[in-house]
Every structure is written in C-alpha cells, then in structure tokens.
Amino acid sequence: MKWTQVIDPLNNIALSVLVAAVPIIFIFWALIIRKMKGYQASLIAIVIATFIAILVYGMPVKLAVLSIAHGALYGLFPICWLVIMSVFLFNLTVKSGQFEIIKHFMAAITSDRRLQALLIAFSFGSFLEGTAGFGAPVAITAAMLVGLGFNPLYASGICLIANTAPVAFGSIGIPITVASQVSGIPELPISQMVGRTLPLLSILLPFYLVTIIAGFNKAKEIWPAVLVSGVSFAFLQWFSSNYLGPSLPDVIAGLGSIVCLMAFLRFWKPKTVWRFANEPAATFNTDVSYTSGQMLRAWSPFIVLTIMVIAWGMQPIKDVLNSVGMFQFEFPGLHNAIVGQDGTVLPKLFKVNYLSAAGTAILIADLVAIPLIGLTYGEGAKVFGATLNQLKFPILTIAAVLGFAYILNDSGITLTLAAVLANTGFMFPFFAPVLGWLGVFITGSDTSANALFSKLQYATAQSIGVDPVVTVAANISGGVVGKMISPQSIAVAAAAGNLVGKESELFRFTVKHSFFMLLLICLIVLAQAYVVKWTIPVYEMLSSSKTVTTPDVSRGYVYLLGLAILLTVLASTIVTMTKKKTPTPDLVN
Image (cartoon, rainbow, N blue to C red; front, side, top):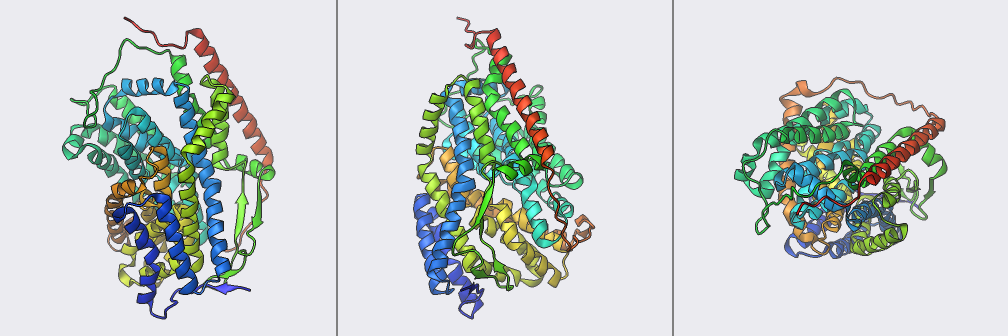
C-alpha cells in the first residue's frame, strides 16, 4: 500500500504553513530560549514532527517510524563514522605529545589569536571542506583551536561561521553535482553562478570572523593580513569555480590563502599580539627548537589525512573501492511506499560504501599515523575507546537530528514550507536563498538541500521569467549560511570543542550571524536576477538522454598503488629524519 504526500493538508496554505513550522520553531525555542541540550531538543522535535506528520498530514504510523529510523541510520553512517574518525585523529596527536610541537610551530608563525583563527578556521577549514566535507572541517579545526588554547565556545563558533563560503564546493563539488542532476542545468554554469556570489562573502568573512573574536577596533589593527587572507581566497575561489568547475575551488582557495597569509606574515607583524581576556600573554620560548624531522613527524597525521581525502575524492579510486566494498539495500517497508506530489514513487535505498566513505579514508590516516607519531596500536585502541566515550552524546544527537530531517522531508512538511516561498512571485529571487538555508538547517547538508529543492527552484524561476541558474545557484549559496546553525553541525562542533551539553550556547552564538549573512546573499541574488544580469553565464541545458558508462577500475588500482607508494615514501622519510637527531627539543638553560 502506498501513501501520497500532501502539501496543503488543512486546505488552507496559511494554516498548513503555521502547523508545518512548529517543529522548526521548537528547535529555535529549545536552543535559544530554553537552552536545552542538543540531544534533548532533537528527540523532542522528532516527537512533535511525528505527531504532525501522522495527525495532520495523514502519514501512516509505520512509515513515520521507518522514516525516522532511515534518517538515524544515515546519521550513524556516514556522518558519525566520519566525525568519530576525525576526532580520533586529533586525539591521537594530543596523546602522542606531537600537538605540543604543532602549537610551537603556530606560535613561531604568530601567537596572535586573530591570525591563528584565519589560518586554521578559515583557510585550513576550507581546504578540508573541499576534500572531506560532511562535518570533518569543523571537527578537526575546532579541536585544533581548542588545543591551541582558544576559548572552546569561540573555537567552535568561529569554525562553524568560517565553514560557510566553502560549503558550496565541498567534498570535491558534490553539492553542485547534485543540483545539476536534479535541475538539468550543467555543472559549470551553476559553479560559475555560485562563484560570482560567494566570493563577495569570502572577502568579508575573514574581517567578520576577527571582529567576532576581538571586536571591530582590534580587527582594524590587522586589516592588511585580513585583506590578504580574504582577497586571495575570494580570487582563487572565483577563478577556479568559473574556469575549472566545481571540484577544486575549496582546495585551491584554501591552500592558496594559507600560503599567501604565511608568506605575508614573514614580512609583516601586528603591532600588538592579541589574546583572549584573562589569557596569559603570548610567550614564545626561543630556547626550544625542533628539527625539520620532528616538525614533519608532528604534522604527519594531518599530512596523511590530506593525502588520503584527496585520493578518496578521485573518481577512479571511488570506482574501484565501490566495486569491491559497497552494498545497498531497499529500506524495508519504506522503499517505494511514498508517492511524491509529482506522482513519482520515492525510492528509499541505503548505500553502505564502507570503503569509499570519507570516514574510512580518515580511519586509514589514523592507522598510518599511529606508529609515525610514536604510539603503539594498543595505545591507539585506548584513545579510540576514549573518543567513543567523548562522542556518545553527539552521536545520539546526530542520529536524532537526521531522523528529524527525514520525517520532515518524507511527510511533506518541508514541501509545505517550500511551497510558500515559491509563491512569492517577483520577489522569489530574494527568497530563493532562504529555501536553501531552510533545507540545510533541516538536513545539515547542502547536498541534501539541493536534492530537495533544485527542481522547485528551476520551475519557479521559469514561471516568473528569471534565468533558472540564478535561483538554483541561490539554493546552494543560501544553504552555506544555514550550515552554521544546523543542529547536525552544532552537534559536531560541540563534540570537537568539548561543549557537549552546551549546544544551546553554540547555537545562540551563531544564529544571528547566519541571519545576517543570509540577508546579504538574498540581496545579492535579487540584484543578479534583475539588475546585474550580465553576471549570469550563457549555457545550454543538459540532454535528457542518459549515457551509462562502465567505470574503468583498472585506473583505480593504479591510483591506489601510487597512493601506497606515496605513503610508504612519506613514512620512510619521517622515520629517517627523526632518527637523525633525538626527538626531544634542544633546551638552552
């Protein structure tokens, strides 16, 4: 027996929207006003959404329960799988004592908290978003900043806010690939349109981050460094998205901004070194020196991580890993049981790509790094157990949040909210980013938001005479600023920043910034639709005929062999360099 989704269950769209908005409003109320813990707010939100889905939308109880289970399972894999492995990597670095060397390295570049935030939260986080995505950037960068001595709330908050501009091109451009598949618009024009929107935000974001951390006057003190960071990132993001496509903007812009800022800091220093209130003054012990081998060893977990996530993003490697290490199944009782508004039956498949998942790439990086940083696998196992214990509540929160997202989508509640925005007529380009923002807030993923709303964005734009690439790209651009307040992202950041149980504080820290940036993007998109039409790329729609190609897995095996050789050479180099001198720093008394 099949059940058909409804958009206006009360036969009055205003009333239907009010009811549909209740679960969303509850999340805001629970985290901002009531200051609930993340998992408590998520579990109660599931109960509210389930009652509305069953009693108002007429969703069968069985389908509602299965929808929640489907979402929770997706929250466990691949999302929690990736988060656990990311935090495990950082914990290994701390346990081995190698993070002390990294802290010394960062202090040698700059002890200024403002500049450290730019290098790690903004630039390095963007690079990680481009390679791994799905929570890894926030998990790793927030943990690094806390390890450096940042206030945990600020560390987690600014990493969430910094992880906006790169989200559109995350995971080697997957959000744009999905938007293209759903809308029928080729990837390149969507990439170009997004690349003509987000660089404006990218230029402002470094100054915005520093202002949040230290205030406007303190941000002005380092404006040359802020300018170098933002302009280099924005230029490289614009250039790569417009001329190379959606796969590499984050990787190129992230690395480019790191190199530019580090090079600039060799010739320019702020007049005063800024630290947090009540934090000891910056001290850099010049009597301590580390060899290049020791530095390489300390950074080796993150070097191996970078190599692995780049390799796992290559299609030939994905193909060979999926050919031997993936299975999928029809979710029992849910697959093809729901009929969408357009009459299509909704497939509900669960893909377990246990080899090609980004979390597996990070697991391999963990295993490679353990001996390189001087730990035994027994010690590594103890660290892993401690990591699981550290993340028990975030795991519950993420599973609950994804269950909440899935029942909102499957019941039609999300479609009710979207329908109202789609009926705003001439002003729809202004509200198009709000649709993406809403989708990412609910699902925690720009990719999922694009899968939900790209077709709606396309059809609505056509009906009002606006080029559809503007609104499809707006769905992506608006979604990036919803990421910082998505309950899923909040749970990841809280876990990395040792703020478990304080998710409400983190939500209140980021929510106003999300609304401000959303307004900025809404105004930009409105201008693109009607005022600066010359920014819209010329393109042709994709052909409706699909060609099925069989992947050439032989290339993947060659790539994997090259990866194994590269890791072997790296490990040998580290072992050789660290044996040249004793692994302890030189102390001059």
